[in-house]
Image (cartoon, rainbow, N blue to C red; front, top):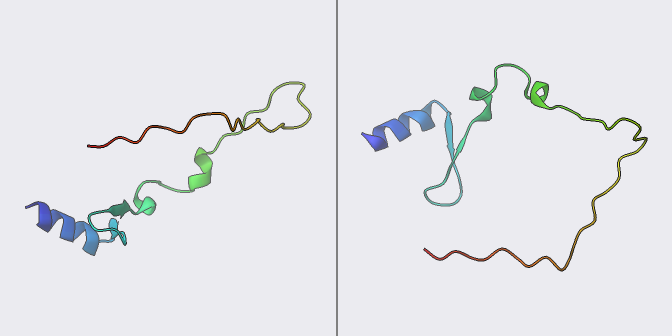
Length: 68
């Protein structure tokens, strides 16, 4: 039953296969009704004339690798 459902979703191009075995991507055309950019919002701070960059801290330790 699972395989039949997955096959139908692939045939209807709702899902796409990845180059990695067992990984699939959802077709985003089915997720948005209209323009995807309509969901993007911009916020501006009052009195702020220019956007500044956030500093990158090289001393931040990397995330741990989870084995399991």
